[in-house]
View 1 (cartoon, helix red, strand yellow):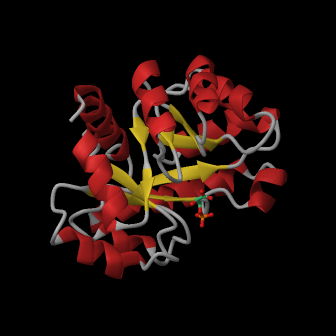
View 2: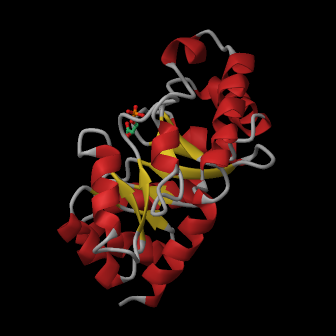
Length: 217
Ligand code: 3PG
């Protein structure tokens, strides 16, 4: 059991508690970063996961980190290099679709709180043994969704989840109603066409609707 890992999960739990939905952001244009973060924050969605899937992602993290009220993390962390780059860019936390020994060690060394991903009980148990008790359940819908999360709550009551992958405005509430779900992740707050057309007001509306899901928790 690592104290650093326990601390990491404690911080991740706080971040997941900031809003019912953590948007999974794929940002192609650096110029979108600030207005997008402002649109989400003004709608009440303040913990933002910027995926390292575009060439500008690290600069997007830097730019969004300047937006008042935004808590910006880096998603799609795969390697130790990703962790170092995210930390240098100012990410306050990291998210990964999975977890490798290399990734965990890098986050612990860099002091970057991590939401590591799992899809099975064995993966979750390995992380719990190391001290991680808040985990991303990924890909949530494809891995059995609400049914599997309910089934895991019996044998693994110490673990809470942020399910992500295949969740949308219609299904989020059923996940948030579960006792072992702290928040859900998803990309539905930032449809690519709204991003391309810079429809920031529409994105604020989607964010606002998402914050109302807090009533389901
Ligand atoms: C991802 O990593 O892409 C997330 O799981 C988002 O999934 P979604 O696009 O189905 O919300």
